[in-house]
Amino acid sequence: MNAQAQPSPDLFFNTLTAYQKSAALKAGIDLDLFTALTDAPATATDLAARCNAAVRGVRILCDYLTVQGFLQKAGDKYNLTQDSAIFLSRKSPVYAGGAAEFLLSDHLTNAFKQLSESARKGGTTHAGSIAPEHPMWITFARAMGGLMIPAARGLANLVALDAKHASKVLDVSASHGQWGIAFATKNPHTQLVALDWPNVLEVARENACAAAIADRFSTIAGSAFDVDLGTDYDVILVPNFLHHFNVADCIRFLKKCHAALRPGGRVVIVEFVPNPDRITPPQAAGFSLVMLASTPEGDAYTFAEYADMLAHAGFQKPTAHPLPASMNQALIAVK
Image (cartoon, rainbow, N blue to C red):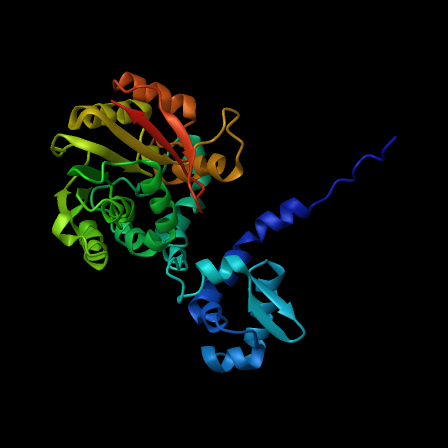
């Protein structure tokens, strides 16, 4: 008979001190430690000189980041892990360190400080993230775009368009614009329409210009629920948007998408999709808590729930697809 496992406080203490991990990572990003290690391993003394910091401070911070898996150490030299080289060095084309500005912003962290009250209420007690023209979405657009590029390119490869004929794609809640830009870049005859708040669309426009598709880029400014979407789209992209709303509002919006698509057109939902048990996979299942803290009625919906919403909106049953370098899934449904 196996001895019964002894009770341990490790999970309790590790959870209560989790803020130390995010603070250390943010410090490494702020000091540009990861970029300083891009080309070769370095000692704390070398890094201190490159990052304009104290040797003792860099040594302690780098040791902690090594313990947490963000760096490697051999002798007295530190080096990047593969993931850190890709996502945390500013020299990487998919640098994601800017995400810290959004994920550790006062708006989100303050919402979690009121989580007990939100749980009692069943929705945020904070200034909700779905408020019109909320300034947090500018931070999101500038911080998260690079992180989305691999998944956006994977989605563009997954959803084929006729490269020989003109097509039309709507990117809803476009933010940085990278989801739609990936389609326009892959398909030279595609016209891209980005929908978001006016101030956020300026970020998408900047990225469209950088991607050399500005001549095929246009915008619709305002609330996705209220504006005229237009018609005859081949694809409507709905990335990380529906989780902010209740089921009835999601169905109402998907009906608008159905009306705006040409016959045979596709709606492409990109979302955190938990399993039916709602506790796996951890990242997707845990996203519901973010919605509890920051929205009145948002949630992380299961595949069955999205299939039901789409059916009520007139779509065929969706198919689900994983995306590269992403915790999201793509749900694709045909009109």
